[in-house]
Length: 264
Length: 264
DNA sequence: CCGACTTTGTGCAAACGTTCACAAGGGCGT
DNA sequence: ACGCCCTTGTGAACGTTTGCACAAAGTCGG
Image (tube, rainbow over all chains, first blue to last red; front, side, top):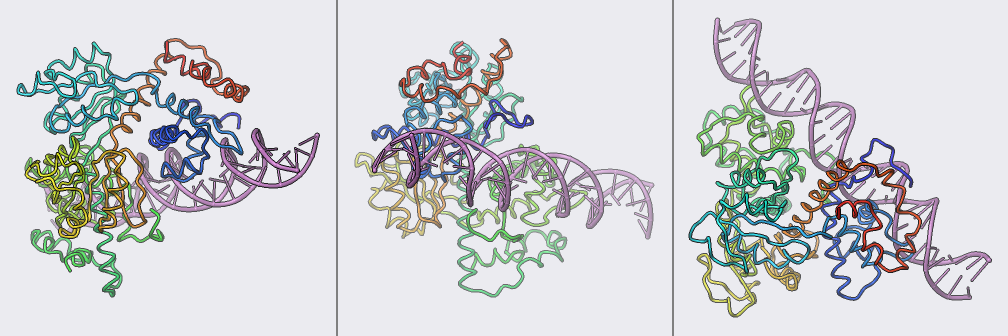
């Protein structure tokens, strides 16, 4: 093995796709440990984690050679190595901004605190909510973002506010020193480079599901009633006129075979 | 990704990465329309959606040629085309299983119903919750999964139950005819092929953020106090003995420079 | 009606990610 | 001590995604 061919990032360069799977492996490993399993093969671990074994082995190989050929991986040892790589050997205080339905659900979420994350504060701008106690936290006013972040040395912030205020909250979090943001608001946040944003968006996930569901439906209809011909080809010839005629024609589904199929 | 010959298949074959971005474009387009903007260039739309313009153009080109060279895209027309492609011109009834904190938050979530998705039923297994009214829905007992799915012809199910019951709920949803599942429970669901699962996992997102946050911290420490040497190279020589000696040594951070750096 | 200007749509190459397939390495029974 | 068998770790092939750069195609002023 020895070293990488230089051009590569070498030391710390774990691919993003791998990083995104490590937490899944970690959870799976915990589950195995709870069942008293001390050693696991890449095949077993991969299958429990829902990936194929080659991918799992390559992922783990980025952390180092922690397996034993002919045997597999020591569960406890691998738990430690993965945890360390993810930065979970330290405690991460987190601030949640927004104590609406979602913020409350997050504050109450058990798996939150379970692995190294700790809700340090819960903030909201609504005076009617400030002062109330939720999941053992007294809701503080959102004006206190800066002081809360500074005092607890928080580097991870969770935005669970309405879309309208998300960018503003984000700016204040960043100004206060937060460098990682988990955003539940349905907006694209803009942040200076060096700040890491991840978004969780229910609506987007549903729309992706809808796309595939629709595709299945279309295929099913197509199978049941064949005879469409080329499928491409059309579309040219009269695009401008469709536009000129307003959207009525398009809205009625005369632009695409799919649209008709679905209406059938 | 598994299905479809892939050959070329221009018409139906929209890359998964593109599909995942279409909802973002759609939301951005709605925002533009609300501001009364009728036409938008790929540059403007891309910047508002947080991607680069070449990617946006390539993404849209998979749906067809809906722009006008020298001008840009008609906002309203593009909204319709993207909606149609995503299958949002029809209504998607959705069943939510689990009326805990998360389930309640989801049922109350406005953006849910806003674009073609409709909560058809809210189910829970806890007798203490069944019968209560949440966000205008009377919670029904989870035993009714099959009948609810059948009656409303539901093809999208949302699992917001504890991890322990998620697989069971999933199996019942699938058996009842659901083919798309959005899973909030922290488990890897196994489903027959042909069923589409997407997962949303707060804990995983936080762990990914922690990884990057930790890396930033390590780099900062390394910059401040240089002089480590090779960095790779070590790790071999004594792996077996570390294992033999139990995890004590590893746990104390003598295996990796990073572990010490973070402790500094 | 024409030519300058703008912006789309796309061929191409590089980067990234996945999967295959197998040599290297280690345990275990004899 | 030896050879068999098992599983890891990884080179190489393949597929997907990104980004560049530019020709094609349209608008608009004169």
